[in-house]
Amino acid sequence: MPGTFMGFDLGVSALAALGLVLAAFVAGFVDAIAGGGGLITVPALLLAGVPPVGAIATNKLQGTFGVASSALSFYRAGRIDRALVLPLFGAAFGGGIVGALIAHLAPTGFLRLVIPFLLVAIALYVAMSPKLGDAEARPRLSLATFTGTVGVGIGIYDGVFGPGAGTFYLIGLILLCGFGMMRAVAHTKMMNLASNLGALIFFLLAGHILIAVGLMMGAASATGAWLGVRASLRFGPRLVRPLVVIVALAMALRLMLDTSHPVGAWLRGLGS
Image (cartoon, rainbow, N blue to C red; front, side, top):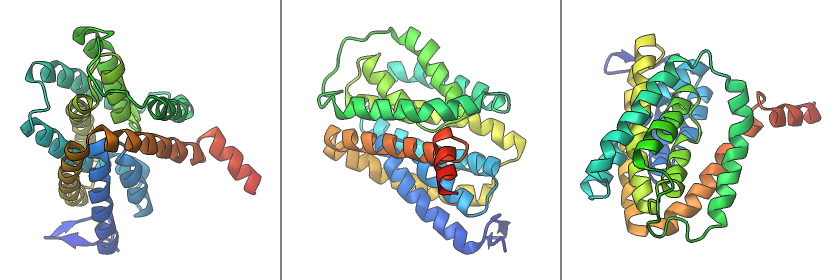
């Protein structure tokens, strides 16, 4: 039976809502460091009985609070370049809106097939490159080219599908823009916030979001994200790098084991 909070219908039971708040706290902490918080919260929402579209939409609401907390913390710590943040934010924001608008037309079957393998490739690359992002490097793309192509592209992907978007932003900023690890992490949060907000606008207008439970999860996510930023600023790349590898592999495994993925369908066929 759906619970209530301060007179608002949660859409799930009170016990399930408590579990979702705890999941959001952990997800906020992990997401602030390495991305992939949706790996925790989306399955939790589905297990609580929220329909798939509602789970994705509500996750955008709660995740926006978490990534906003991360972005603000990095900004206050002086890790975000004001001259760069507006074009990066604008590109991801526009991409997020476009992605959410075309989500119902997008070839998500193809994305579900390919993205896990890309995440495994990223995890292996990061694991085998111990000095990746230790220092600034010469950029391979200008900021304008990066924002107009990669930034917009990942923003669209985040609106359409989402898993791994933060990891793709992070690796793109390091490999293509020459950012150091911690500078890339900080600016990734701004881009994640932008594409989240863009997609969130669409989902709010479409009425798919469980507002009350999303706000409760958002408060927990923001708290976890604040602690995650503190941890990443204290321990730096030696904490971020292994978590990126672990989260990327976990997301890939989660996507592959889904019955909509050929690998998951094959394993299910073996077990039947």
